[in-house]
Length: 319
Ligand SMILES: NC(=O)c1ccc[n+]([C@@H]2O[C@H](COP(=O)([O-])OP(=O)(O)OC[C@H]3O[C@@H](n4cnc5c(N)ncnc54)[C@H](OP(=O)(O)O)[C@@H]3O)[C@@H](O)[C@H]2O)c1
Image (cartoon, rainbow, N blue to C red; front, side):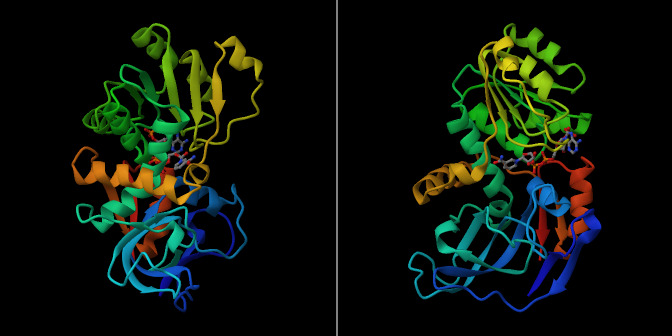
């Protein structure tokens, strides 16, 4: 099999494609031929060493494919099944061993590439809109990077729940995509908190902020009293330490820094979120926009484009 390996942390150039022996599945594992691996911003943080991993490592946490073999303890999956996963390491590869407890069955109405594109970011968008802050009909919701992988899904799911969505984007092309996903208002970053105030009066109920350093202060200023600041990422860099008084001064706000792992901690929670997600995709309620497909060996180019804000929607690697 082939896999991308990081032997030293650094820029995109440290992503090198090498030949490996096939992974040895444990009794509870499923061996999968990878149809597509999802590229996520967390892969960039791992590659840079911002979230340190032991070296060398195979990056990637998401993908979909077809079961090639099952371990002797596996009961729920069989050779030939279509499957997908999120938060499973070593996904930038042509083959992977996935613990059956983390594997998801992909229904017929969802193509493998779409499953690879929607699983990690879709599960994240699900917990952010259903658990971190339960979006309700009539809520005002601010979604940053609204044409990104997370942003297009968050926008559509918040609209499914009846909210008014205000998105931020950096370009006209991205504005068009955000509007196609259902965003009611689309802003540039500039002085977005003033524009949010003009649109809403008292501010939004929740901000979904995966941009981090560049947007944090204005995100706080965009919230209505008792609003929720869901800081779920840091594409522009980490947010410096926050004085809790800021939350009091701006209206008894809530601040959380959630991650996917804690929201798919049990099999029931994982399958609940995935069945909603794949159901919406199969019924056409959730559209998955794959902007770029790169051959596995061009993982470096995929990272360069993601970091340079050149991509929209989902980025995939095809082994
Ligand atoms: N906590 C969790 O459970 C979880 C799970 C999945 C993802 N995430 C986070 O979600 C965020 C989005 O991830 P994604 O994979 O969907 O990426 P993405 O949104 O497709 O790409 C990042 C986007 O962020 C915007 N951005 C603003 N300032 C930027 C900067 N200085 N550098 C790079 N991008 C910048 C860009 O959109 P514009 O050009 O429109 O500004 C860019 O396209 C990341 O922070 C990621 O870590 C968190």
